[in-house]
Image 1 (cartoon, rainbow, N blue to C red):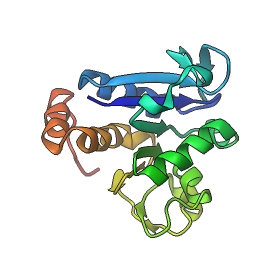
Image 2: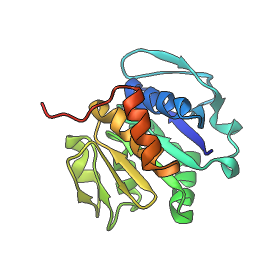
Image 3: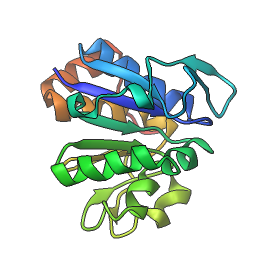
Image 4: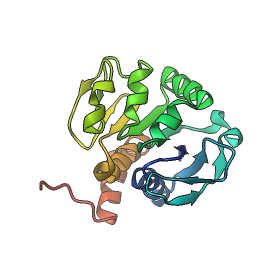
Length: 186
């Protein structure tokens, strides 16, 4: 099993962050909710405050396999302003470890040059920030060690893409069935 760290900055998008935590814990993965501040609770963009498992200073990054960056505003800007976290994102990408970002957060990867030559997606108004990427308009995109998601409505698909990457597609398909997630067109 993998160890996943989901990072929470003030103003994060609640559904994007918590769906990842829920789906991956259901799948038996170890998931830590991490505050990027010294506070043990973080308030999201819709005034929902959630207790964290750890603060950033408590994370042993050597034992973490996957970094997850939820979107939301100003959550995404707060994540990007966190130098310690950005150093880890750069290191994980360089080492080929999994980094996943959804909604506005893929813009962070674009700004840092990690999407050059990669396929990616993001919230529609943030697509211009996916610098160097081939932009797709689908719920989630996996390209090598980078996983991106489009937005709140794609939170389950994004979570399943992470699960497929760290376990396998069969595990993701079984989880999709277990949570009654069906791909459909509106």
